[in-house]
Each structure stands twice: as C-alpha cells, then as structure tokens.
Length: 334
Length: 284
Image (cartoon, rainbow over all chains, first blue to last red; front, side, top):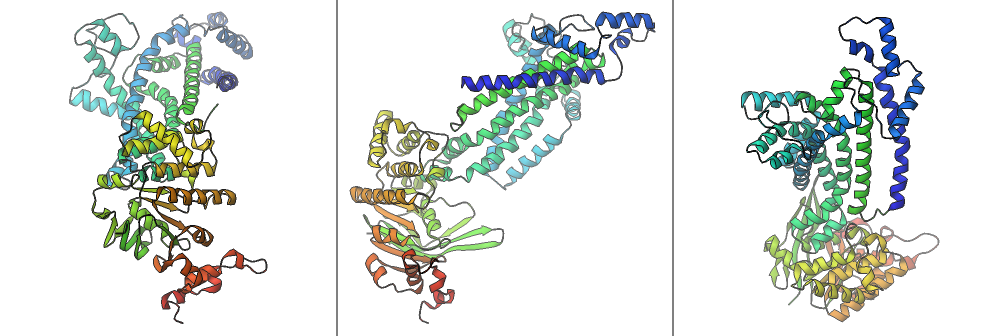
C-alpha cells in the first residue's frame, strides 16, 4: 500500500510540471498584456510601460520567467496578484472554502439522487420509469450550465420569489468566518435566520452544479447495475433465498459501485470546471469567480497559480479515489 | 410421497425474434434420498426447468405447469416471500461456474454465514461454528483461515466446495447440482463428484444432477431422465437405461461416448441419430 502511494505520488511530479507549463503558457497566449490592463483607459507612455514590465519581470526571457515561477512554487510561493498585490495562495485559501462548500453539496446531491435513480432504472429496465429517468438524464447532461442557471433564477428567484439571486448569505447577517463553510458558520454565529439565509442562497447553485454529475452518475449506475444483475453471483444470492432488497442493495450494488466510484472521482474535475460558470452566474465568491475575474484583468500570477492549485486538488482527489478502490474491490490490493 | 413433483412444466421466453419454447410439458418426480440425473445436450431445457423450480428465471420467462409440488406444497402458488423460505433452506442449488457464482466482493465465510443468517436463528458465534463445520465437511483445509478468503484467492475446485458448503448450510432436503463439474479440471471433477455422492449418502438428502456426461450418470444416479429439445424422451433406472435404452436419442447419446471413438475423430450424437427419429420415437 505504501509502495503504491509512493509510486502514485512519483507519477504526480511530471503531471504537475506539465500542468504548470500549460497554466503558465495559456494565459500568455491570450491577447492583451497586464500592464495595459492596469493602465485601463489611460494612455500609457512606452517608457512607463517598459518600466512597469521590468518591475513585474515581464521583460525577461519567457523560460527564465517560468523557471523563476517554478522555483517559487516549490517553496510554496505562488507569487503575488498583479492587481491586488496579495499572495495568490492566501487569496486562494480564503476563497476556496466557498467553492468547496458548493462542490461538496453538489456532489452529495448528485450521488444521493443519482445512485438510487440508476439502481431503480436498472431493476425496472425498460419501464416508463427507466425511460423517463434516462431521458431526463440525457437532457440534464446536455444542458448548458449558464443557461440552466439563468432559467432557474428567472423561475425560482424571479417568478416565485423563493430564493435569492446571488451571494452566499443575506447582507443582514455578519459574523467572522470560523470554518469558511457558510452553513456551519451561520449555525455557530447563533444569529436567528442566518442558517436559513445561507441555505436558501446555496440551493440554486447546488442544483445547477449538480445537474451534469447527477445525470452522469445516474446513467453510469444504471449501466453498471444492469451488467452486474446478470452475473452468476447475483443468481447465487437469489438462490440462497435472500430478499430482493439484499440481493440488489448489497450483492449487486457493491460490485456496481466499482465503476461508479471512478465516475464520481472524474466528476470532481467536471465540478471544478462547472464551479467556474456556476459561481459567475450566482456571484458566488469562490475560486471559480476569482479565476474568471482574473482572466479578464490579465492577472497572470493569479490565473496560473489558480489553475495549478485546482489541478493539484483534482490530482489528489483522483489519488484518493484509487485508494478507495482497494477498499471496495478486494481484487485490487496494492 | 415424492419430495419434488413437477407436472407438465412449460417454459417460454420472450425474445427479440418472438416467443421461444424452451421446455414443453416436462413432468418428473424425485423421492426423498434419491439421486435423479437429468441428461441431454445443451439447449434441451435441463437447467432452465430446475431454475424454474428455484424461481430464478429472468422476467422474460413465462412458466406454466399443472403443479410444482415440493414437500407437499405447490410452490407455484406461494408468495415470493414464502417461496424464499424454501429456496436456499430446503432446496440448495450449485452451478456450473463456481468462480463466477461467488460474489467477488465478500469473503466466502460471509457468504456462507449469510445463508445461515437468513434461514436460522443462530447467533454470530454459532454461525461461525457451523461455517467451520461445513468447510470441514466439504474438505477445505485450514478452515478458519479460508473462511476469510475472497473467492479470487481460491481455485475453481475450492470455490465449488464453498458453493456446496453454502448449499448444504441449512441441511436441505434436495440439492440441485447444475453441471457441477463441467468447468473444472478432470482430476478435480472426480473429487467433486465423489464429495457430492458421499455427502448425499451421509445426509440422506435427495439430489438432482444435471449433466451431459454419461459417465457421471453411471457412477452417481439411481434414476435417469433424458431430455431432448425441451421434452422428456425417456426415463428409467440407471441399469436399464444403460442396458436397454429405448429411445433412439438415448441410444445415440450412449453410442457417442468418447470410448466408442474409432480413428482420430470423436463420435457425435448426429452420427447415430436423425432429428426425424425423435418425432417417430424410433418406430422407423
């Protein structure tokens, strides 16, 4: 097991370098430069432009800039934001809990609804329920997130006035962050109504972010379940006189979960991508919105640092999924 | 009174190409303590008719029968939950592919004890003791260690022993063995067959042995039913079947035994038997 972990961690190093090159290069491929952006509408003289470029180190050869950047990362220094001048890492850490809270709620919603739907669809294969669920899942999977988000806002916030349009909590409430999770912090603050406000702010973004993972998980669970239900060991379980609940819920599901766990792991990446759009639609102050804003400001250090940090999170999640594999599938031992 | 009595069993499957009749009016009976062999080639409806008794057929199957009586009860009229009280307890079944028949995600000990948990009031410790006893009965060495093994850590022969232990867990009155040795090595085949025969004698249970191996039939069975294309073509005790087979298909089946091979080619049933003969019943 330890050996396996070390091997996997070793593989992460080249992946990490690759991602850092891509992150570093991509933002520089965009037209426009940060100095020009800082100047905004004002006219800037070529001398001042060169001076600022030199200050920020943009006049040096690109390879030197990259190696300098990589050297900083190794020591935990992701550089300072060009715009706010604050360290990228501390900005990331301040905003990340908001994204994490949203992502956890979304993946929980997707799993809690998606897995049972997939199981029932597989067991009732070919029924109207199966066809209905799979049809809706296909629609959900194909739905552009930004459009879906806007539709929900128009209906639930606009027409029904049930949920707020944006933000994490009503401006009426203020309390210092303890865990960074608004649901928990609002409870800890003891202010009446704060939790309800946080929850109502969370519902729509969660639904929007969960839509695609939910559709994928439901479809994957159904197909894994269908495959497993025709296995000999399921017949054996029935031949033992076990009730259907136990045959499906234990013998079949345990085996069907193996591919489903992979899917859930892969959805974490989708979730991060989805968070960027979802947070922008709902003005959710997380890293997704932070990244989008930074791209518009050509804040090179924030974009490359943010991309890299997101990539690290995805790599760690994938590693965890691989370890989790061994726990649910005894045929895999490291 | 017979332990299991099937009268006029018909089975049809809904397929893409329409309805397929797999079993056409089969009747059979097994007495207590008796070994009945059902023989016939692939597709003759041997396995599916026994799966029908167990209630293990897929939803595409339609079962009709005058009755399927087990121990005096017509199991066709039982509710699913009442039926589950019989299968796994009074009727045990083992299958062709022992490795695929055990759940890869659970230890074999868990899978055996699960049967006991379902059908008996034994507590955890008693269930473990019974599992150990069963493992000894079926000849698995290092009993205590092996209980915590996963199926993939065992050989095919050992997996079949586990399956047998599982089927025998609640002292069934009837054991259905569906080609229990087909997927195993020849040497292991013999061991498993001997084990089954010994256990049958020891426990006094009845056994239905589904096979297409006439050698197995000669060694183990009291009575034989021969099936061809979903129909029973002949039924008699073992001695008379081997000495004077009546139906042309049975004669062809016996003639096609590998020991009758001449030259470098193995004989097949079609060398001795034409399909039309099945219809005329050998009168031609």
